[in-house]
Each structure stands twice: as C-alpha cells, then as structure tokens.
Image (tube, rainbow over all chains, first blue to last red; front, side, top):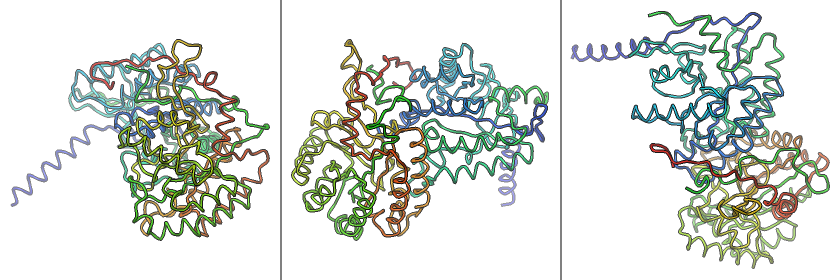
Length: 293
Length: 320
C-alpha cells in the first residue's frame, strides 16, 4: 500500500517537474523608455474555416464569413483611426480566400502572423511541416516575407527550425515568458492571452462546442467593463495585456463601437504602448533573453 | 472543384457604409421580425407543443401584447409564420395583415429542414406557400429558417437545397443570413453567369440576422423554469447595435417572439426600446419585401455582386 502511494507521488512529482522545466518566467518585464504598459491587439482571422473544419452547417459558415466580408475591414479601420498597430493571426487558407483584405492589412502596417494552414495541426510530422510551410508561403505571398509569429499548437522544435520568434498561445503566466522544448532545450518566447480577454467567449454562441446550457452570450458594455478592469490592474503594475478578437465576432458594429471607446480610454492613460506582437517580441528577446543552457 | 463550394455563400467584400443609400435619404433601415414559431425541437411544431401553456399564451395574450406595442410606435413588422399555424389560426394571420404587417413563411411547421431530402423539402415548401397565401390573401415572398431555442447553433437552419428551391418557387428573399449586417446575396452556383459581362451566379437576396438581437436567447434560455433570464443583455445589445448602425447609416434588425417578449415585463422593455428608437429622425421602417424591392433596384447583383474567380485548390493532406 505504502509502495503504491509512493509510486503515485513519484509520478505526480515528475509531471510537475516536467511542467516546471518547460516554462521560464520573467519576473518583471521592462518596457522601452517612457512606456508603462504594453497592449497587444490581436485578431484571429479564422472566418469560416474552423466552422468548415468541424463540419458545421451553412448558417455557421455564414457567421464566420462575416469576418472576411465585413469584420476584418472594420477592425483595421478602427485600428488605423486610433494609430494602433495590430497583429492578424491568419490561417493560410484564409489568405487564399481573402487576399484583398490581407493585402490591405499589410499595406496599413499591421503584422500578419501564422494561425496554422487550416486551423489544425496534423499528427503526422511530415504533414505538419508541410502545413506550416504552406501557411508561411501563403503569408509571404501577401507580405513579401515569412511570418515570425504564430498562434498555434505546432511542435515547438519545428517552429524554431522554421525561424519563428514567438508563439502567442499558452497562458502559464500573464507576462511574456519562455517555453523550453524538452527535446532540444531551446526556448521560444510566448505572448500569453487569457480566455477572459477573448471576444468569442462572450459573443459567440456554441463557442468551443459549449452546449446551450452553458451559453454566456453577453453585451458589449459588460465585456468592455471586464476588459477595462483587466487593463487598469495591469496598468498599475506596469504589465501586459493581450486582447484577442475575431473579425467575425468583434467586427459587428456594436462591438466595434465598444472597442473604439475602450481603446480610446486606454490611449488616454500616459505611457501605454500598442506595438505589433513582433515589435513586442523583439523588445523582450533583446532585453530579457532566455537563460543560456 | 467548383468555386468556394462549402466555404462561402457570397462575395468577398461587403458593401461599405458610404455605398449605401436608403429610400428618401433615410439614415437607417429598421426591420422588426416577429417569429410565431413555438416548436421546441428540430422536427417543428408538434401536438404537444401546441398544448403547452407557452403556445396558448403566445397565440393569445402574447401576440395581442406585441400588436399593441407595435401599433403604439407605428412599427410595421415582418412575421415569420409556420404554415401549420396559418391553417390552424387563420384569424390570427388576417389580424396581422390588417395591422399592416408582412406575412412571410417560417417553414411548414417551423422545422429544421437540413435533414430532409430535396423532394420532401420541395413538397413542404409548395404546401407552405399555398397555405400561407390562403390565410394571408397574398403569397409569401419571404422565407425564414429561424432557429429554435434547442438548436445547437443559433443562426437558423437550411438544407443544401433550400436556397435553390426558394429561387425556383419565386421567393424574393431569405430572411436570416449571418454573412452581413445589411442585405446581401446568397450565391448557390457561381459557375452560372461566368463568361458573361458580370459573374453574378445564381443568387437569392438574404436579409441579415444575428442572434444577439433575438429575444429567445435571453429570455428563460434554453428552457422555461430552469433557463437563464438576461433581458438586460438583450436591451443593451439592441441599443448598442441600433446606435452603431444608425451612426453608420446601415440596417438594424431585431427578432421577437410572442411567448417571450409578449410577457408584460418584457413587453415594457420592448416598448421602452421602440420609444427610444422612434425618437431618432430619418428612420426607414421597412418590411422584408420592401427591403428586397429597394435592394433589387439600388444594388442589383449585376452591378453589386463581386464574385472573385475561384482560387481554391485541392492539396494532398488538406481540406478540399
């Protein structure tokens, strides 16, 4: 009996040690001169692709299609009107469907980063590499250069072989931090976001397969208050906030109006920096590099 | 591989704010939809549904309450009617016509048609058109596939054949599409029309729907007795969307049900919102058919539907 308990504890302790070894935190991230807090405004430009991948019905595809026909243009117009630079994480397939919108995103000076070829990562390693390269090539066809950022669950060693500087997916810490690949020992910067600062959580019915009893569809005033509170708390600490939006969700007129009010309120505070994710990543990599191993 | 079959239903870029012009220089088009569906399951209205207190309330006090509130604010609505209700309660339909509302089709019995065969769906569609025409005095020109509270997705249901069948049956519009917040064209076959002056495909005008402006998702959702009651979310969504769309000069739509918004407390909320809306100048309160007629004249597909050529490719190991 005691042996069994000891073995159980060993297994749990090893799991905890592996998790700890995979993360390297930065206790206090410092920002460029005069900057108190950094805000990344990021768009997941999934449009209808995830709906298609999950074989959802035509009404769901149309819901996503709003993002490509209407939402992306409105979000970019909003950022431009406030002189804010955003990052658009786009699946490669969406580049094929909405090239004109993405050319506009690039022309206006926003970053375009990877969001997987088809919003999923194949299990087969060769196919995974093929997908990642296809997605990068699709983005390069718009921007003229390969993306340096991704929001994906691609294998970290593959991302690093392909030259990616950062991922923006995990949420083991609220500040930018490093993920260390257990195999290669190399660290990759992660720009975290929390699901509470994700528009789909509050506006998208059946989000992540949630059943009807678990719907939390809400209104923009309530979401705006929640996000303002999150911003204010980080502002006091001199921290970081990553705001995740989907053009098919936040591109609706009532939510664009809310974001306009919210972003203006943030901009009115001294020392708030709205860089692209790449700009922020390069700053952190230069000033807070991962420890040598 | 045809065009973007299975991925998109319309063109790649919607009309921008400054490309819109409403009749008589109106600042914003307003469409209020009353959904008479009382079905609780995808199969549509059942005998059990009709015997429920909610259905009795909807047919009597609930609808009377909505008619009173709408009349107070001179709001003309578009009513989505399951055809069986037009047969069972034709006097209700006649009263709504008398009020000046438009009667549109809401399926044979407010059902999810997505699992029907084309033949089944066609015969139901033919019966629906005839039954509603008989009760309303004129044939319906609009068709709604609105969702039920129990649906797994809140956007409404169509089959792969619905839009084609509606075009063949002479319908002018489909009432609930989510790909825009103004009317847009639902394209069923982009290949038709290729090689001519304009690639417009085979398309049906679609009016916008978004579940955040539909009362059923905020009123005792997803079921009576145990559901969530969040009417304040709904009221704020109506106000925020109306303010934003009015400022942009676009279109505002909302959907109400007699069994939900007909209850006195919620009818008061609707009354307050309509008073707020009506305090704004230059509104165009339009029914579905009026919107469709305006759109056909001002934004015909020949000049306003911009289908990009197919760029979709099949790759090994990728979605086709």
